[in-house]
Length: 104
Image (tube, rainbow, N blue to C red):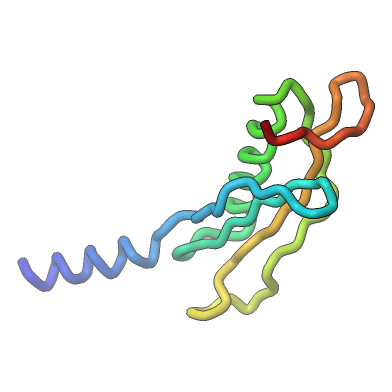
């Protein structure tokens, strides 16, 4: 029984999900959201989660997401180089006028 518990603990550590640092405003008036895999999650999963977080952030202000730049880690992935992604974005007016959302 003890051996099975140790094996399950090891599997759960390997199968971790993405960990996001939240949305941060940059000096350039854009925003950044970064996420890293804490296990065997692929870059596609953390990219989708980060884009979703950015979209929700913009929609809360009544605006739409405009991606400026996407940077991700490069394979091979191993213990000290897990998949990670950084998305730089702006929130645009629904009428198409580009403007960054102000943090109030």
